[in-house]
Image (cartoon, one colour):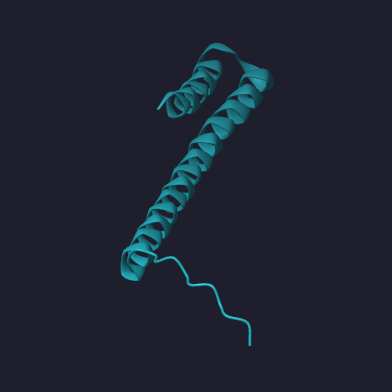
Length: 84
C-alpha cells in the first residue's frame, strides 16, 4: 500500500508543480511527475496480479503434492531381491 501511495503522491506533486511554477519548467515537471506517478501505479497493479498468480500456482502445487502423498499411502520397506 505504501508503494501505491507513493505513486499517487508523485502524481499530485506533478499537479502542484503545474500550479506553482509558470512557463515551460512547470509544464515539463508536471508532465514528467504525473506520467511517472501514473506509470508507477499501473506497474504496481501488474506486479500485484503477477504475484497473486504465483501464490495461486504455489498453493495448487502444494495441494497436488499432498494429494499424491495421500494417494500412495504409507510406504512399506522393500524386500531385498534374491540373486538369480
